[in-house]
Image (cartoon, rainbow, N blue to C red):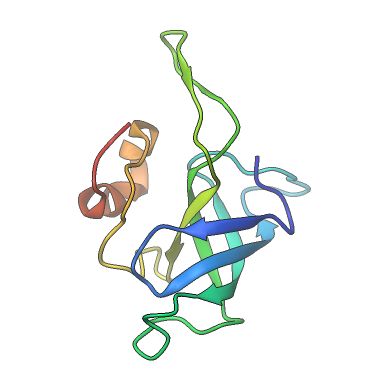
Length: 126
């Protein structure tokens, strides 16, 4: 579960390396975000190689889509899976990804709805 002050890694080529959650979106008094939820984040670290060509700057505020969490995620068939780290992808104001590639596989849960653009630029599915 992702809550305020949680640090997340960025898995796209936007130029950010680490972000910090500021607010969980999706309801009044909502405390936690899970896989597929939107959060408001601030960029805390940039990648060393791309500081000059980065699409983002340190301290900027963006929305982010949660792609992987450490907490177990259950499926309808009774199985469950979990990841090793908390990972997100940055989104612009129109709801489209800032980056052109997502470097890690994402969950099949994101296939529905408005996240089809993320599916098309991702490496694979889990």
